[in-house]
Length: 284
Ligand code: C2E
Ligand code: MG
Ligand code: MG
Ligand code: MG
Image (cartoon, rainbow, N blue to C red; front, side, top):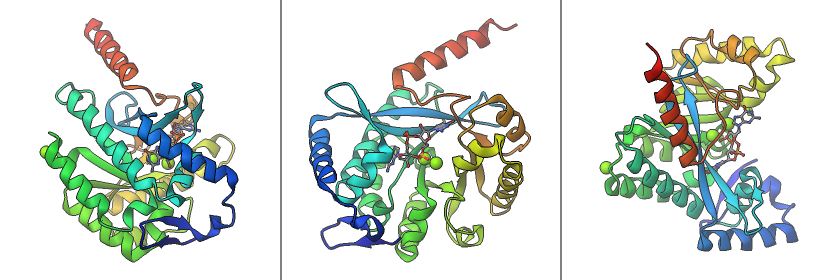
């Protein structure tokens, strides 16, 4: 499992290479088309403070609605876009769309931070660093409002390249987060050498918590170790009250999951925020 850099900027995983098929080729064309026709949009899922109410940040999640109205999951098309050399265009689209929305929401109190997902391929050259630098200059957005999520596997795919890119992003004042931590073999020791300020524990541990007794012990140990290297922990995948009650005992943890809030369109989020404010103002 090693990300490869090619002169053309294409990026693919050798492990998956064999699997390229007619379906993938068709999907390539559809992704190209979707970029041209602007079929992508963003949903935002709030990440809450430990009280489960105060919004700490919003995670931008890409959505692709096709002409027939159906959605294609990013878990399906992002890997294809990576192989087709289309991921940097998608990442740039996401950054631009998120910044455009943030500028509208600036001063509204809707958010403090935005979290954007990067792909492993984005770390293999300086394209993303240059693009973010340029967009931060163009938009009225402070780099300390921006959190970039990079999966654990992307961090270790090519550790030297990743470290370089991460240091440059960090130097811009951006916060770096490790997504799906615990799904691979990275130790916190490896991460302590990188400018990581947030660790998102792989949702699978959290989802399985109701069934597996040891999981909470693992989650709380990761939270403890993360704090010791100066990083905040996000517990994602909170799907029920039982799990929420348990993870709320981790005082410094940030919380995310369907039980707290689904990913939403910008308009839905605005409605949620205005109704929350109404409820709060009705209280004595
Ligand atoms: P991720 O970054 O780990 O995002 C979390 C995924 O879990 C999202 O799925 C979210 O909708 C879902 N989720 C949220 N709460 C819960 C919960 O309580 N239970 C469960 N089972 N799931 C929950 P989504 O939006 O389908 O995204 C899937 C993956 O696709 C993301 O995982 C991320 O790796 C990738 N992705 C999404 N948007 C982007 C993007 O803009 N750029 C890149 N490069 N990747 C993206
Ligand atoms: Mg994420
Ligand atoms: Mg600026
Ligand atoms: Mg995740």
